Image 1: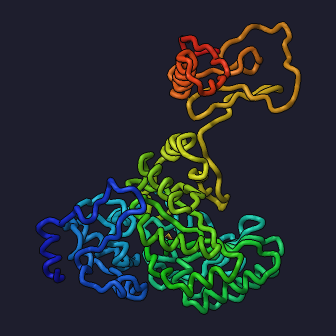
Image 2 (image 1 turned 90 degrees about the horizontal axis):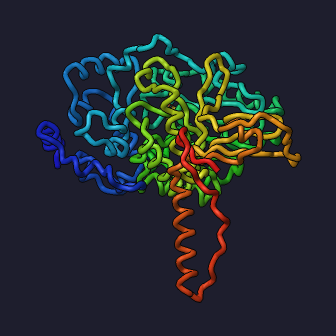
Image 3 (image 1 turned 180 degrees about the horizontal axis):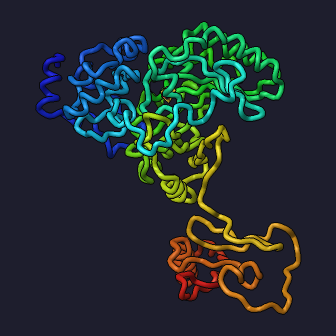
Length: 473
Ligand code: SF4
């Protein structure tokens, strides 16, 4: 299909079924927008071709995706302020018929970037620059340092926390002059054990410069871990089809990759392939996700994402609340939304797939974990804990005799603290129903005189209806 045919198909409705794949389990199929259908595979799989053909202007976008006239004007005005780059591979993941497509929202400029809805958004919301003893280096936590090594990314995420650097034309041109000073600082601070090489995206650096950072940092005896923060496996996996780059990361020994999948549709055959290549090369891969309105602020999407990551053996590490950065306020959700999602993950899927939800604190306070409350009450002798089903249980950590003085008879949570009850179990708990069924099945097998061994079950706690919706032991 020629470019003019593609433009015509945009005007008359896209063959969207080629792009959707909503029902697909990640990793999803390889996709290619019709504009690039005739590009030979060797070019499509070449990161240089992908980078050279990245979409970088509203003029290119207008021919490929639908916009309202107001949007075109607003986004055109934004062009002088923020950069855009979308490699054809990542662009092809967009469903062009869906104005709210989650891949579109992350990559295509929005007029909302001009607004500052709460007035609370800041240029440097994490105050990284204030904790920067050397240009480009942030030393905030006692044993960690963050190095911003470039302002270039393979794709410019519209929600980026470092929009001030990555998306402003010119960026921090002083970084390269200070590379050696950053290394010297780490060398001189023996308390630093973990260095995060970030940006921008360090996997966009020329190999010689990347090698300079990795080998110098890894050679410092007190540095145990060198983490590379990169979205390349998500937005330009072709960069890691280059075995020499994987070999470099592997040869350094201390390198971990911290990547950044936000939506299950980003987990493709290509991204799975490069994550697997890193793992085979002995480079652990962890994932950051940012909670983004319209992109992944639903339990269903988040479960698919975490399960998809486990399938490709990438460990979900952090779920970040979206930072209050100017130009990204429209992506922010309430903290309650994040807690609601965490409530729906814990207990419902393997702990391996559950990230830590964190709010990055204003005033440079760093990451603060936020989660639903699982400690309901406490006494000198015991705590009352809540599980994901709503079961309340007395938990006695120390080996102490139970204090049973006269005591006023209490009920509910207080009775758990008192020790007169050990658990309050929701009446309609599926697990307890399953137990009952297991017991019935087991006793039926036994009474039928089956030769197989009859498993002895622990007796069930009898459940009795209660006014507060809990069954009582
Ligand atoms: S890749 Fe990372 S640094 Fe670059 S724009 Fe996206 S979030 Fe920002």
